[in-house]
Length: 359
Image (cartoon, rainbow, N blue to C red; front, side, top):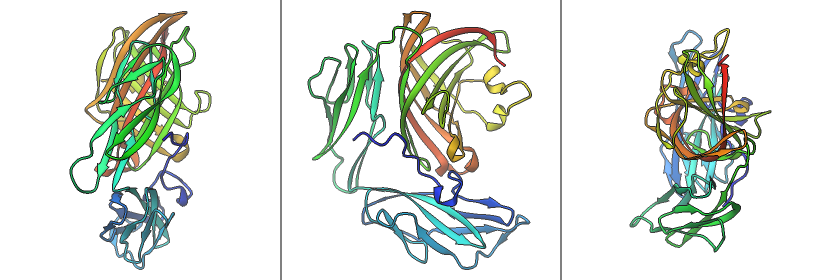
């Protein structure tokens, strides 16, 4: 199933999508847990609400009024207990002390498939294994397999390994989990110059997004006298981005390889009077995801990967293909492990060189 271009779920009902717990001059209201995952028909124990008064002291919450943005997905009773009704993701809201806070509830079917790459972008001769999450409420683990209708652009084996052959697409691929099936797409891209890059990525956690758009890579002059690398993917466009994936390496990208993505503290990326130091003098490989319209910003934790599968010459530069996977911690909930987002993507991007010092 190809999902909508943008399916970002957060606190839209609060008027400032992004903060699932509002902080205002009247104090702080928070809901625990921030994220719930349930199967259809399951119930979750009552959610807890915390109120911190204007002086920073814990205080009684008083009467709490609960609501669900979509009762068809999940209902919540007066005590904060959630009942899952159908597949989807929904915000539940608590109102108390004149404040509103929320949490996200993700509901899965008893057998559920989530494609992490609804659309896969590769270059001819690339290989890539499609990532997918299969959940099963009971019984033995589901038997998962892949297939694709005959097409000239790619093949896929039962394990989900894609072999790209020639430019073309998008063409369907199908993933089976027992009797359940879902479909995504593969497009094999062959760039001829330094325009026309494409990406697709998914975000899972307290923000959910499945989007594609434009992407560009650059080897640029860093403040330390060397060169650094940046991959920047923007949705819907570079001219007017509402979502951004940015991956930074402290050295120029020159060879296909698997590159580690490390952690970055938001304090290391504070803009100075000139430019953000973590870009102009990268301390280590790091990554970032932002949904600007939603007010959500997240920095990478340790253990991510940027895989570059090919670097080929094109007019005025080079083209690269690859994939990335990393976790990113939301800055508004930087100490809450439930605010850790999971990000997966694939891309074909132009790679250009710049001698201009980062500013």
